[in-house]
Amino acid sequence: MTRELPPPPPETEGYSSKPHILVFPYPAQGHLLPLLDLTHQLICLHREITVSIIVTPKNIPYLSPLLTAHPSAVSVVTFPFPQSPSLPPGVENVKDIGPSGNPVIMASMRQLREPIVSWLSSHPNPPVAIISDFFLGWTNDLGIPRFAFFSSGAFLASILHFFSDKLHLFESTEPVCLSDLPRSPVFKMEHLPSLIPQSPSSQDLESQRDTMMNFSSYGCVFNSCQCLEGEYLDYVKLKTGHNRVFGVGPLSSVGLGKGISDYSVDVKALMSWLNGCPNGSVLYICFGSQKVLTRDQCDALALALEKSMTRFVWVAKSDPIPDGFEDRVVGRGIVFRGWAPQVAVLSHVAVGGFLSHCGWNSVMEAVASGTMILAWPMGADQFVDARLLVEHKGVAVLVCEGGDTVPNPTELGRVLAETMGECGRDVRGRAKAVGQVTQAATEAGGSSDADLERLVLELSCL
Image 1 (cartoon, rainbow, N blue to C red):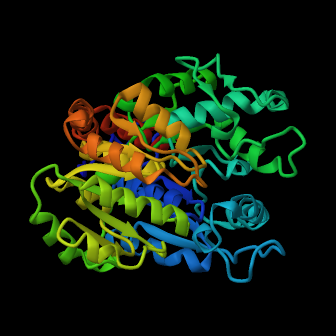
Image 2 (spheres, rainbow, N blue to C red):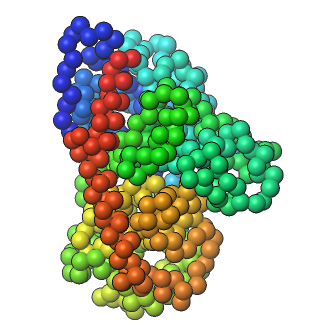
Image 3 (cartoon, helix red, strand yellow):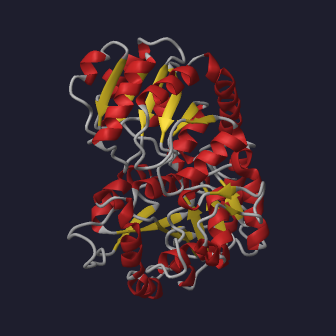
């Protein structure tokens, strides 16, 4: 999906041949990288677009692949990170503090409003629009049309909107029915997205107000696609009252990609190990860029893997893997520490399942590869994502839930063995079928390809 749109005739009314776009990512890996992938696609599709990207100094390295690919089209606008007494010195990205730091980082980012307004007013060729992360709802009010970029799904966005005027529901601890949404889903209170304050008196309603401003943006862009979330993309169109809603995912299928040097694991050793395994026999295990399991959780998962007799690759970070575990499973399982090429791993023919926390980027990568997910949602949007995968699409199996839960090793081992075996055949078949349709969405004529073209034309007409 790297072809260019044909140039319009010069006299086309309302069409700017060289639109200047401002891009503003939220400083968290799961938010930032998909928006950079989208930026790459916009430039590939309309070679005359120029882009200015707002970042703070320590986040500039993330831009390297984009700047290398488009050196003349992309410029960097750097602002000092607004310091807060609630943040340790030097923190500029969620990875440095963990997901619990999101409200503080969101509050700090709001302090960039005045510097951005000043930059806009003094620029000789000010941008015609801004594409900013959905955590940055306050950018609705910068004086230029704003497209809210959702690094997560339309199901989550629909839930956030549902609660925008219903915080009184949190006065009860009973499960809540989201009657306004397609399928009228019911959620336990503790499984609702952490962006929603758990009571009307929550200390920081600013974060909630930020996310609620997204549906009043000029447009909404989702790292999702019609075949996965069509009913919720339609719901967003209904609630925004316009058609400027774009499902352009999975962006991992059409993004910048990464070179082998960008990963901290031994990629050649990892792929070589997978090459030696039968097709569909390996369970890939990874819980995203932020979650680190506790010692008890690691002990339980390790024992479950031993009991399951399943082949596996466990990509850990600083997780405390039990002593002697790797020796006991040698030949059947292997542990890699660091950041692995997840898209390549999921696409490998040996991989038959993915034990995941169900963060949205992992979801999109798994769905695009046609890989069955064994879901262990832990927080944030992950319970919502798991519901979509398990109940709506039937491409996942729930094996555990909760960020603090320590699973029973015997039970988890049994579920892993059964799901990776004959009992998981139907789920694997559905995952493969959904994967083929999802991949087709980003190809010429697919729904995401068409929505990307619509987005480029919309930007060009501003």
